[in-house]
Picture 1 (cartoon, rainbow, N blue to C red):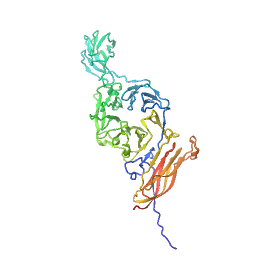
Picture 2 (picture 1 turned 90 degrees about the horizontal axis):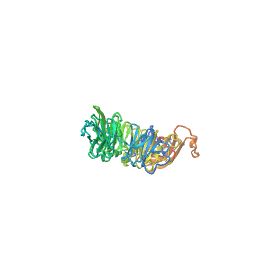
Picture 3 (picture 1 turned 45 degrees about the vertical axis):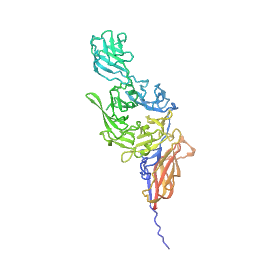
Picture 4 (picture 1 turned 90 degrees about the vertical axis):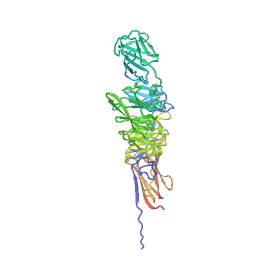
Length: 597
């Protein structure tokens, strides 16, 4: 009997992927990590690293507000304020929005702030205040600019003029003889001059007369001698002063350890200047209470409060502003923080885990330290996706921070998601893109994320994964895809043969995945489509009938013998409406064959 030596079968190997790390466009798709993807769309990755189709959104309004874009959605008390066209609307998130009769000039630069329980709206044209009942133009505080003023006009300076108002008050100390009193301003407005003498109101043209050209007030009877007993309030409009505030479009509340002052900037006529209101008074904008951040013409584009400091972000540099009391007087100090990095997208600024994050010319940056001025206090966190991200309109990007995700929405409908619940060894989160989200603004309200439409006056609400049918965009399918890296199995010099792939789907009301494979010999070919449904009466469908009620993942295996290949890649996709695609794990079994010659 002849005996033959049968050579042993080549050893079988297996790759397992069960924690996904998002997209990496920084390297060739054969050299990225096994749990990274060179191509992903409309996938969300949870805190355990499981990728699934992102949830969709639905109309939050019964009907559109009109053809214009939503210029802003702002939270005030327990409701929202919507800026659309020439109007502001009050909305509780459920019923039809109520027009407030604001009569504003439309502007895509609208912003707001809530200060001492009042809502303030400013958009480069209008400056309005709303107390929950009445909306109106901000009524300016009338400052007392001089005290202990002698009849000849000499006195002690007390407060600055108010940029947004024409009124000013002077307190005089009569000598008991003078009839004529000189105001510090001349060429007065025709508004009635108001006078109080020892607390008693006097009438113009009866008790006194006014020469508005010279600024003199002449009394019929000489006021009695006293100290600051004569109060005169007059009005003079200074051309361009009001615009210094009304043209602002960026707001921040900062006062050191207490939020005592509003800061405004964004005026194109003075781009380097930040102006401050009076102490706890958003109706008073002192003429000389401002800071100029360099003289290079580079505009201030935003703020980020960090601990007891305020970081001022310019187009080409970062600055630090601090507040302290010196002999009881408020003092704001400024110093450069980083002269090599600046912000491009003014609406990209967010505080992520106590650190300011923003979009610059070189990518998304994170300020990691503000203690010492140094170019190393900023690090880039988007290097893996800059190849795509920086090709887009980064100047007009908008952002929000929602449930451990920093969303960057571009005008073309693309959203790059920075998920900082999943981090690499350097403490940097993962990135992946979504599309079909044309957002002009975001707002978190009642634990849900809303966004305003950039095309028609509609507001949309993102669904919750626990909703009955969360995987559609206003009834339309969400096209989700996830590609693995192109595997060389750490043996580029060998031909390989794949034997089987295994994967499992997370339990869901309705779930499926279409699986494709590609090699160096052929482009993506369809391999299989697998389904997993849980029985639910409220979603009963005979075409998907099942009694499956297990809470365990549904495993699938598919034999796939591809021979003499060097590279191997998988694609998982789902374009079906109301279906999820939660991939719990992926494994690939393969053998090495002969060397490539």
